[in-house]
Image: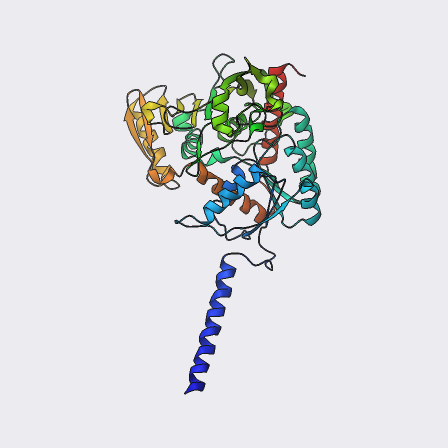
Length: 463
């Protein structure tokens, strides 16, 4: 009898061990699976570095190596990862292996503990980090911006050439392509019966206009975001047109010329650009950074001893493939209602497509279609187009309103900005699997960073 019980216990123990091994494999903790993508997080100083890990991915090892100097930025990053690991709903199970030291870059390049470097932080050295990483044969997933001035742009060109030579991918995080109203605006812009063709526009009345408003004081993953003090230094973070402006430049290219090769030397002409500040008081600065005084490197931007003139706003007027476009990125201190907002207008020969996000829209982006000739034939054509779109986007409908139409989008598509990082990661993982980017992506990245950095030179009269 005792022998039988012992035999049963051995069998049960073996089954438990087998279940444990399978569980570990499912969580991608094994370092023996060479097919897994292995992340390296380098000098995380922006919360976007953590947002790419807000979800787990079957293709990514759960062990992530982090190389950084010690300090508050690293602590903030690790706190976010810990928050995701310990949340009640669908917790993650990342295991962060940390190296802290001033030689973090050289240490990362020497150890090469992964195959994808994630970059989101201080932008002053980011282009160099990119170039050094691809030179070492590492793929790079970089948060915008990859370049904040024309010297960076020249270095970035070299990095793309090196990435191609070393057969690695260099890709930036463009979350706004995943926002559903932007996606549908793009779709309708290429339905000839609804939109016609994109107008050429003029310098004073561009055919494409996009504007974004971001806020310094905001919430991330349910908590008030603490920004590092260098975030307000244009030499470390970049001006608005070279930072968040890259999202708008990307949307212009992606929506208006999908799949097209854009040659920045032939297809882009920056006509004029300007920048202007958003003033922040010391008390507002303290609320955002948790610092009680301005650091020395911000002194050149301070007036009346207590007001920081942030490099927070800009405008670029340019032509792309002969089409007049204008992008306007802006920053304000804190939203009185809603949050970060986006405006977009594409003018076609048959209709205009407009995204608004104001009080009338309950601070949620809404896509409107304004026909140049609001006839029954147009309504029928639009309804047919919506039915076709339902094959890809089920549940999207159209509602007639005064002088036009509103696209009604089911709430299931409103996943929020933070969820878009997972969608970008899924695209990047597919590119890694295919070992190549779409042919238009690298020329497009070069075009937008050329446009942004050239515009900054014009706005500041530096070159």
